[in-house]
Length: 172
Image (cartoon, rainbow, N blue to C red; front, side, top):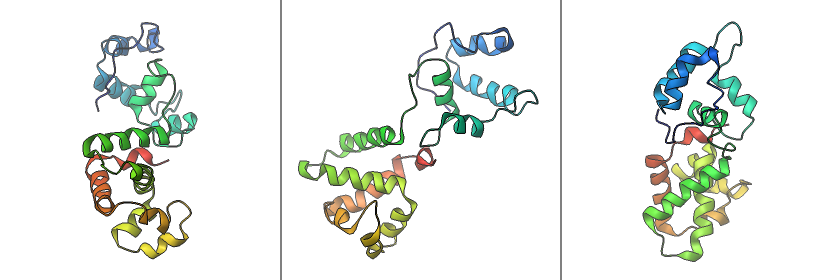
């Protein structure tokens, strides 16, 4: 796993004597080693019984956090965890940058479709299996929403999400 960040501030919480082994690696930005150390030396120990699931629950965010993001927050490199919507906006911005839709008026419909497809197993199933009648009663993404999406994007967005978006990050 690669964290795309700069080394932390020197007053990092990983600097106390208890974590001297990790301090140098943390300050040097050697994230693979830091994550390996946390997994082997800090998680599931009798004194604390820390693990990634407990840290995720303690963070109480609306999506699945990775250890790298938790370490970034602990070290003060990020002020807060991104919300699921922040992550979806970022992924949609990448899509728009890659495909540059000509239909500016369709952008809101594309965004709604993108977010619904990325976050809902049921909507993905309905669209992938061509069971569009089930969208008529869906409170998140309706048949009307689907019709607002220009035809070429109805297949392009699901393909893009399948190829470039990690759906695991949107699980709660």
